[in-house]
Image 1 (cartoon, rainbow, N blue to C red):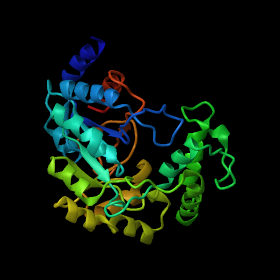
Image 2: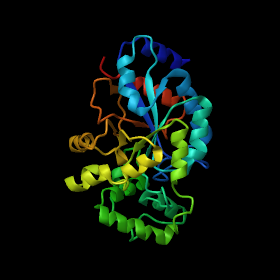
Image 3: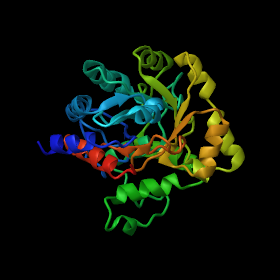
Image 4: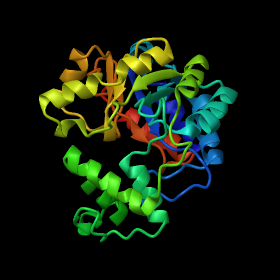
Length: 313
């Protein structure tokens, strides 16, 4: 009831804004956030989120958010985009059936790194290594300040993940390789093959780009940043059968320079990670997404409406 009242208040507003949600792994068993770098959201919890969003909001593809915000009038539903990052088998096996059952559009931002063979990124290997007994003071890992998590929602695992993310790409690759000593080889079903990506696209879902290497883009020099915007994109476009016009910056990491390079590379929209609404006339290359893995329904609904109501009129 409280959510319905808040939604009524929102619909009486003439704000022309939208909101965007990001999720990663939806799978069983679920894992509490903070215990893994890529925690899983339980399918049942995800189904409740989707049903709530479809019932109370206007769901659109990510690339259509700003136009949906511009078209919104007093009394209209708040436009929302559901987005998913990384090339995860659960996107096709778990997420897509739930979305299709609810008639919910969604956008998947993929790297294309596993079109032809299995591969896991460093955080996926890190999580597997944790399950097999990795300790955070392992000499294969970088030194980190665990006190950075104090007074925040971060845990020591989160802080270590941030320390690895901030490493130079070559050093981070070394850590990823070293983690295999504990995690074991990447599983044969890791990632999405070309035929699986094609199935997502044929089902009507929007496919965007997430860069092939998933580097933190603000930490790259100009030439490396230019390559990141380009490498692997055309191959993924051939699989999908249409251009990739939107990019989600890895780790939500973007600044003015990254946004400019995305525009120069021919993208029409770019997405970061932040808890704020998207204005119809806002920067197309700095559209914010809120991570919903810690927000079961109806908490997610409350968070989205309150965030939307904080946006300028």
